[in-house]
Image (cartoon, rainbow, N blue to C red):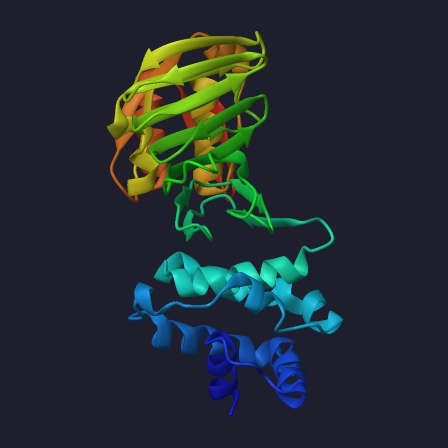
Length: 318
């Protein structure tokens, strides 16, 4: 009965009041969450995109119980893991519905990754987003109706569905990257002084302050938050998108930025004296799934330091 009920709900069929109450209990049952996760994975991993016919407005009407709204976020933690694995529109639709109900007071759908975690998602308009480690992405519940505005803190790669009436906009601090249909990367970690918008294909307009700049494929706009200045550079896609392929890459990266990214990738705290590495940079690319110790060994030889790993802490000394 529970499996059939979950399947009926996700398929878009109307549930009776008794079925809604039962669904509420299932969502609040800690022991059943694992079963729901495995059932979703087993039943949806071969689902076809063209079979998805649900409309968001219809889905929003399905659950009205405040108890479900309050518990939706806990269930989302389970479903979010499935979304990262399956990457299918049907699951994204279901997640979108739950977040709409959960965040109706703020009007935002928020997706986050933790340190050492990456994920991907299909937005309601079919645009695809890959999120790097320690990244937060949000968009309004009416996304795709009146606008396509995304808020980003961290780093993400976008493949945007074309819609000439509704430009796709990524707001990352003082920088807004606007596109119709294209592929680009935005890197905007709060701890790093530079915000980068890098165009791979198509065309984007980057707004900073009152200025608008149009990028060409292969061109990158770099905004320095400390100096409130901008610069145009060419970039190597293999370096900028290395993280999407589980590779860690640096090209003339300041030492402090290297440390910040290592902390985010491996979930550690690194202690060092910034003044000793102020002028040092690093250019290197590591293949996927290299251990932290292997990476530190390479960097230590390149930059001349010693290190010690103590649980989740790393100490670097010249």
